[in-house]
Image 1 (cartoon, rainbow, N blue to C red):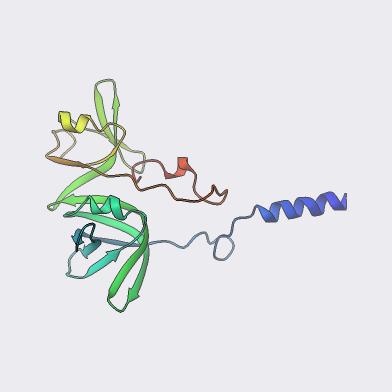
Image 2 (image 1 turned 180 degrees about the horizontal axis):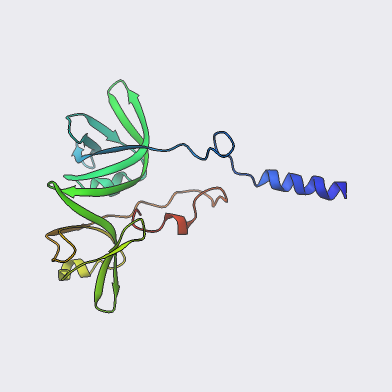
Length: 187
């Protein structure tokens, strides 16, 4: 019986995921920055965020680089780990971001869905809002993450497609996020 209890104890401790902090504390909260996407330099260039309400430029680095690069001139939020270096601040490890505004106009960011003849945009919170009279160009992007400017009861004034963030490389890990957890509107 003692051998069985000892073996069970080893099995449980081998499957325990490290939280990186005190018990019950959970993972540290990411730093979040809001600003205008600026791409600078030669192809492909670096992705910067001009902080809302200021002139500071923060370098963005992480798996979301290519996705955020496609959002040049839009206002977004990005989450990662803020670090200070000799040439300014960097937001590292950026995987999560969302589009907030286009030329000062608020936008909706989420997955475009279609049920029958009804189009909706489903945000990262799971809330769906109607997309009235979507243009044919937008209708071709059902299932993709998009941003839309305009009010829900009128056709979108502008829209764009948000490229998905690449899946993390490496072997599957019971302690890491599953594909189900990575789904939704913040792809």
